[in-house]
Image 1 (cartoon, rainbow, N blue to C red):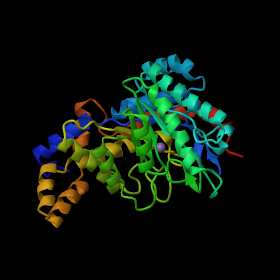
Image 2: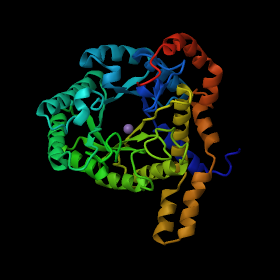
Image 3: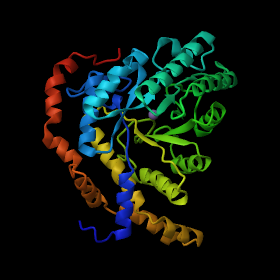
Length: 401
Ligand SMILES: [Mn+2]
């Protein structure tokens, strides 16, 4: 396709957008995962932190836009701050920095009835200490974000005090916030249900927002695109969070039913476009706007992990570029004069435009493969790691039972 249908101004807008776009990949996206019924192992899956860093380094080598790797404290740093030097060495070796630090407040047996919301003061103290440890790990590895998802909730009405648990959460987040270094951000994620099925302690963006406000100015809301009820207008939430100055970041994934953790844009690319449009609109409206952290939070249990990750990064980049095609000044004129169809066509026209030739040109100018997915397929990396790791993965646990 020729780029002649895209104006020079639009092309330079896309290049500028691509220059500023980076997305964080999660260490858990390379490891064996499954469903709650079974775990499906893959020969190429990463079996330790070193292999996760190697995979992340390969994704960054192919795409050039994934400079950081999100780390999970329990899975990646079982020794806490003592693992910081190992992380730093791996980061150096594979050309990918430590990204957001993700505390574990959901896996241990003590957290059966909650972590920072647990009725037991002793368990709450343990969970709060884990948050403080996570802040300390972030400082030690030079990571900007501590990204917290609280899985707490209850399954039956009347079994827990929703109101007392609000107070306990506020205490824990205030304690964590007080320990932050000036450059650190505390991200608070929300999710309406699962694993709890009656009430979830941080169920929506309003609850996250209030917890951020009560914790302090370095706490921001994290939007996981899979953590909403069907039909929720996520871009409207994004716009509100931007206007309130509390949009901290995204966990990107796609879904058809619940929190499916499918690859980004696989079900509804138009929604991703609409979310990115709100970011571009905010940037156009104010030079003071600071971009949120873009992060991937997916679980690839059927697709090959490396392929799924590269596919997601490329998809995010392309949808970000498409949203940059919208001429914000022109759109504002059409919106404010209520030229509905013209406004919608300008908006939809950007979504329907194939920007891939421009993105490829941008990659080639930087010495990157024009088509990262094709480069992954022809490069032999997946075959090599499948051979190296196959035996280890063959004996790994295939079931949660
Ligand atoms: Mn998430």
